[in-house]
Amino acid sequence: MEEAWPFVIALVSVVAIFIVFPAMVFHYITLWRKQKTLQPDDERMLEDLWRSAKAMERRIETMEALISDHEESAARDARRPLRPERFED
Image (cartoon, rainbow, N blue to C red; front, side, top):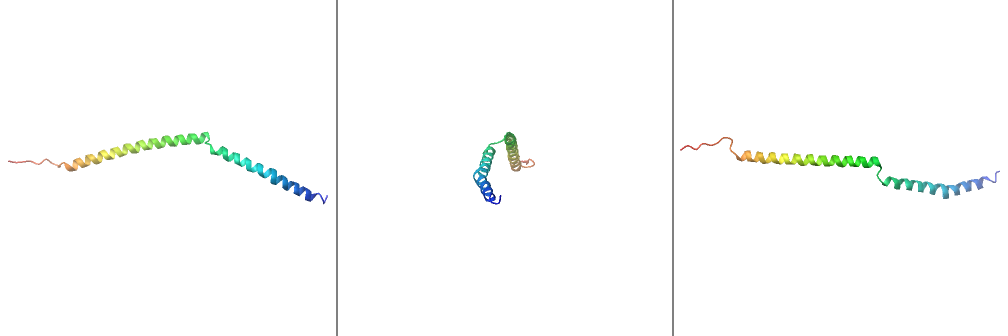
């Protein structure tokens, strides 16, 4: 029985190196390839983010237009005198 242990250790080592280790590597490679594609939940979240970004962009454009209109009206009011001047003959 004492003489069988080196053979068992060598057999387990060879099986681990040439079968188990490559199987683990290929298993994780296939998992990584699956993760490269978007899952349905990820696609849904991405679509929600896209809609939110579009809505925010529209709001920002509206705010910029309102600020621009306000600045133009303030500039017109600044050029106009506050009370009418009277010309007396």
